[in-house]
Length: 217
Image (tube, rainbow, N blue to C red; front, side, top):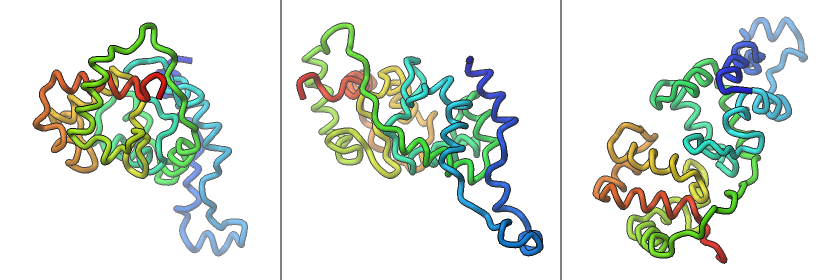
């Protein structure tokens, strides 16, 4: 299934959150069975498979270099990004087309499901990582406090994404986007942290983080 075909599915997906927006009078007349229920995990697992997996992979990891790995991402981070796409604060044609149709319950349902996806390691590299670039990348991550927010294992948590083993191209584009301001965040933390880093060092950081953890660690 292509990403374009997957986008079309959102138009016919059931409005799971609709029950929670019913008027109080209607709920009263309908009796106890009209009580609103939280999003069902099973239904969002199915909707993820039909809507999201075509681009992001069934297990949350895709081989597309500019499509982010969702496997292992915290649910709070996921819902924040879905919200930013829905409100037009992040710009991506495919994601905006999906997110603008989602209810608040959908945001919670999809993000809660994403939060259950276990981390999926990157496939073995075609060639061993460059030891010099890896050492410099590690030093840059420590110098610029990447490990302070993302953790020593780069696994993130809460509203901080897992970045270890993320696609290098996606990391590079994100880092340059944060530095230039073309990619907004929910805070100014990333823009401030990257503002004084030379562009060449951003590429080294992306190289290092994409290959984290180093072989043998």
